Amino acid sequence: MALEEKERIIIPDENGEEHLFEVLFTFDVDETNQSYIAVVPVEQKDDDEVEVYAFRYEEKEKDDNDLSLFPIESDEEWEMVEEMLNTLADEEELNQ
Image (cartoon, rainbow, N blue to C red; front, top):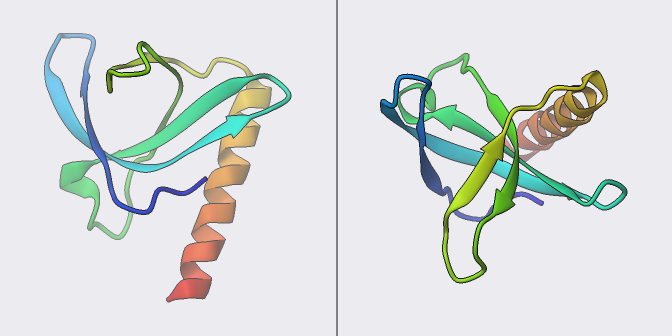
């Protein structure tokens, strides 16, 4: 599911420094009951080439906007996320 308006989230790195990211999209996989999020650093969002980060996520509380992010570790998960990124990129090209 693509987001209608661009949301931004703050993600701390391994040193505890916080970085602002723009959410590209989120999607759920019914078979595994998992949710995924793809983000880009805000400072790169208008560049020709951007580094996309993807995570599996869980919402902590329904009333809270806080997320728990988890690294994607399996090849199967990466392939699924890459397929979604490619689909999104193809849709963006068609809409331009």
